[in-house]
Amino acid sequence: MKAQLSYDFYFSLIVFVIFVSSLFFRLITLLPFYSDEVNVQRLRSEAYQISQILINDAGHPGNWHTDMPNAKRLGLADETANKTNLISRAKAKAFNGLCNSAPDDSDYKKVIELMDIKDGFLLQLTDKSSAPAQSVALCSPQEVSVKTRVNITRIVAFDDGAFAELSINVWDK
Image 1: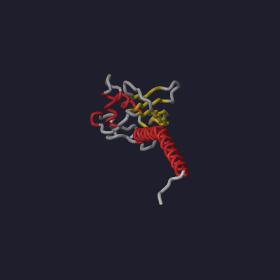
Image 2: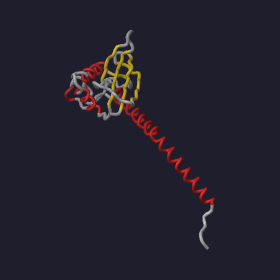
Image 3: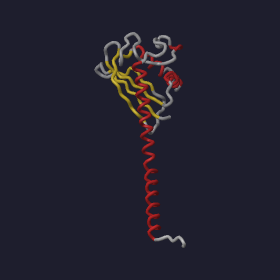
Image 4: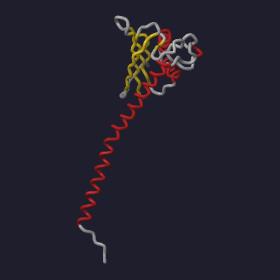
C-alpha cells in the first residue's frame, strides 16, 4: 500500500504555512515598537535615578562644593539637615559653576564622570519662589541632537526655604 496524499492534507499544510508566516511577519513589525519602548523605560529609570542621587545624596565628600579637586561624587543634598528633597543652594551654584566653567565640553564630561553617567543628560534647576523664575543651575553639552529624550521633573526645596523645580533630560549617546 502506497502512501497517498489527499487534497485535505495540502489544504491543511497551506493554511498552516500561511498562519505561521502571518504570525512571523506580525512579530517582526511589532518588535521595533517594543524595543523602542524598552529603551524609553530604561532612560526614564536612569533619569529618575540621577534625580534621586542629586536630590538625596550629599556627594562625596559631603562638602565637595568647597573642596572641588577632591570631589569623587556629586550630590546637591544639604549634608547638615539630613532631610529628603532639601538641597543646598551653595551646592547648586557650585554644580552650575563646575558644569559651565570651560568653553568646550570638558567640564560637562567631568560632571558625567563624577556622576557615573553613560548617556547624555541635561539638568535645569529653576528657583520658583521668586517672581520671575530664575535659573540656579543649567548643565548641558554644547550640542544636543537626539531622537529619544526622556524628561523627569521634580519639586525640591532649598535650605533657605525657597522651592525649586529640578528638570532632568536623559538620552542615548
